[in-house]
Image (cartoon, rainbow, N blue to C red; front, side):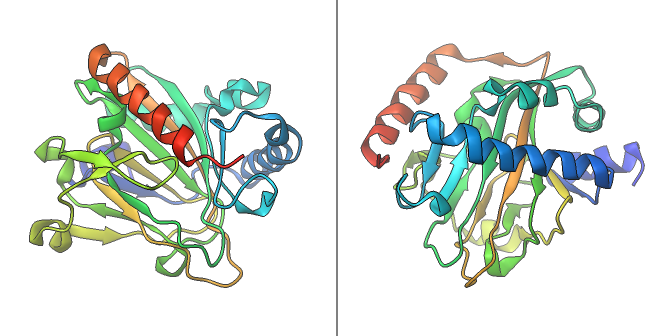
Length: 251
């Protein structure tokens, strides 16, 4: 896919898939440092930076990590030229990373990702913000692939409300219209494949229904230099999110 095709697909659909953008050695370095971070750093993190499907006594139930840039490797990784070029090609302007995250759906858990739009959380205008989401395992419908509503980024932000999902405090309250379902697209990825989605694109994921397959991913959020945050709306969201985490986090 050329740069022009990459951007055109993103602009039309609100997301685009790129197969294997990293060299094998670079992907191995990333996964090795993710393993190190989980082994050495996560046990000392506060509950707000590492979420568990069960609790901290069950490390295999780790489901989400955020603010990973506090680690030296991931702080530097924010400037990885492959990821940065992809983001800036699509956004058409200089961009920087505003979030480094990891997600998992452990086998045989009921953890779903509610339908949401990232920019409801970010509160950025213009919405020159995107997420690059890399599969670390084979990802398909059985273990909870991402599902995008094609073209939804063109129709603004939908109403969101409180969920019961730790790490995704707000979800679209009226998701599931005929238009939503008609335009929902599933994604199938191999380890190292990525999806890039617009901050306003509606997306969700089902639970991992498999008996022994993880559904791990690594993601970075890029925002263009033209973005301006609505600080009032963001402060309101952060307060709501903190209260949500305090209510749901098990320590």
